[in-house]
Image (cartoon, rainbow, N blue to C red; front, side, top):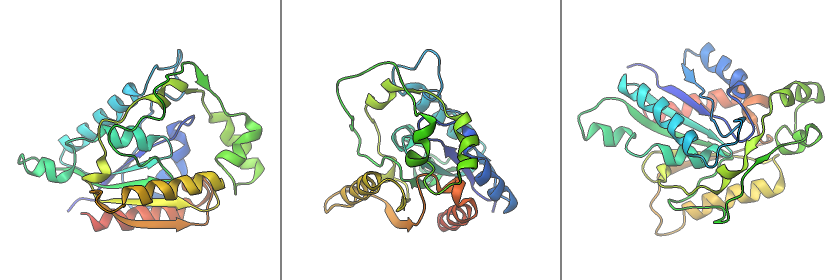
Length: 243
């Protein structure tokens, strides 16, 4: 049986290069990964919503499952919104019901938005971009990394289209696909509390979900950079549960 392919979805203000360390670790273990560039990060002019992000994710995963690959989708931070929306009908079970091979077999949320269908941050759409100042990058994204490494990472940060934050989810993939959530306990305290709230809400009595594992790690917002070997080992372990 072939190994699953990892689709890595970066967060706001980042590019696929943020995954470089993790991609290297996965490759060492013989796993292929694909990290698409999501247009709401770095687009000029800024995108008015997240529809182009969803389209890129949809096309990326559709292409892979069309080749009958099993897919594990890894979402970081903001991309939990777009990833959770884009995967409608691409899960393994849905495709098998149509006598189609391949499909998404597992979701891995890394301190990412895990929200229900119809979620909207605010109905009052704002346009333009939001940027992270280099001096704020450590507290926001790279809490436990050395300043020299951060100085290189901030060179790759992009302006984020502000309008993408106000789009509305149309699907909740975690209700249909086996899901793990990773909480990074050295992240900002407010982010840690928010992540725990999202998980608790999704697992509340009467809520249909497929969240079957919660892992807490002593890491900041980007463990795939600070703890790339650990992250790769967790991803591989979780992927193998669903293949």
